[in-house]
Each structure stands twice: as structure tokens, then as C-alpha cells.
Image (cartoon, rainbow over all chains, first blue to last red; front, side, top):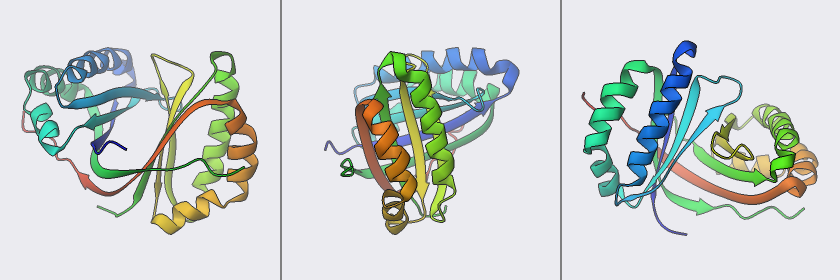
Length: 105
Length: 105
């Protein structure tokens, strides 16, 4: 399996901002996917709490994640437009993934 | 930060089964949350591909994850009801999380 750094960003906004927040988050995700070291950046939404989004982000290595945080779009979209709408934020970084084979039925 | 094992289960079904699949997945998630070693089990849905779900699961340690895979509901719901509807599956296990502090604006 390709070594990578996983970032799980669990973020919420106020319910009335959920649609706008989602649109800006998808705009941000598209900009991140264009980063050289970003392997994937995908946005998912909670069905129980529609104002809650989880981004599952994969970077080639820690340096690629650092470059992500230094990028212009991190500043112009992530910090300047998403953060002000964010009511809660839990971002965790994991590395050394191991694939889990399907269990025998 | 509490040490834990993270499992990211990225699963898809055929579009026509998406609603049923989601219902069974939420039923499975509720059963998993009742496991002693399960810290959290949350289901999110892709907005671009509504037949795609991601479960973000946290277990106290590898033994708790093994107990999850040996559980009755893993067999009766996971294997017997979800797997037959599953068209693609990518399940990865991560450990040693590090919290990512907010970047300075």
C-alpha cells in the first residue's frame, strides 16, 4: 500500500451556514487536490447532523502536508473564509496505514 | 490525546441500493457503538456520489478492533447484509494519531 499521511478533519458550522460552508469547503477541496503532494482530498457530510462535514485528506508525506498548510488557498479559503464559519474543529493526523482485508463470511 | 486505532472504511454500493445500504449501515453503526472497545463509529456520505459512504471508526486498541470483527453483529449485519450490497470497499487502519493545531490566521 502506498505510504501516506492521512488527515481527518471533522468540522462543523452553524446550521444556517451549512449550505454556504459546504460550497466553500468543496471549493477548497478542489484547490487542495491540485497540490503536487496531495494524493486525495474528499469531503463527506453527516446524515444525522448536516452542518457537520468530514474531510479525508491524504498527502504523500509530512512535507506535502506542510506545503498544504503554507499554500495560498489554505490562507485565502481555509483561514479567511472557512474558519470564520467554523463552530467546532477536530483535525487529526495519522500515518503508517495498514490495509484491512475483508473478513471471511 | 487518547491513543486509539482509527479505521476508515470507504464503501460503495450500486446507486439503486443507496438508501437501503445507508439504513443498514446506520443500524450496523449503532450496534458497533455498543461494543465496549468502540470509542466512536460515525457514518458520512459523499455529496458527489451519494452511493458512497465513509465510516470513521475509533477503537481503544487493536484487540478492541479484533473483538469488533468477531462480534455477532459484524457477522449478521456487516457480512450477511452489507457485504452483498457492497460494490467497492477500501478499509484502512491507522494508529498513533497526532492532533493538528489550528494554523495562525
